Image (cartoon, rainbow, N blue to C red):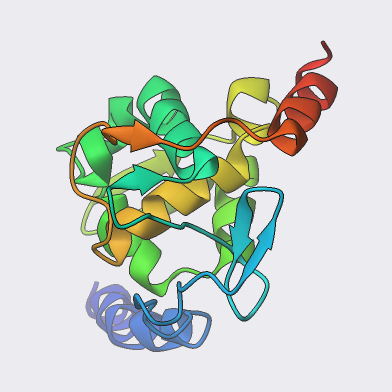
Length: 175
């Protein structure tokens, strides 16, 4: 019994150290700044999808779409606007240290966390077209929430849907 408890204690001490080695540095407004625009889709300096808000409060199409898609599928577990629930963690906190590739992997493949006598399971959404066809949109919305640029609630103004978004949607959804 002592041996088992000792291993559990050591795992609790060293597990955060191994996990932190895979974590990205904190995302910030500066890192998330849009430096490139491709037909209404914005990218940061590292080439990751990001958001763009106009001075009058207008959000880019992809952020608005991400808001809609998040609230169609993700908020059931992760709470409205990514603030978490008793069932799943707040994504506005998780996203601060999560890189784009990790986000895609977790959403597509799912994840299981066991700790403190509790098991949390993120189901895989890799075959759900209502999610995977809009992964970038959801990422962009949650990133904007995580760095503090997007307030809670539905964005009051949105940019028009770019042709590239229409084409991607038709191709991905099969229509």
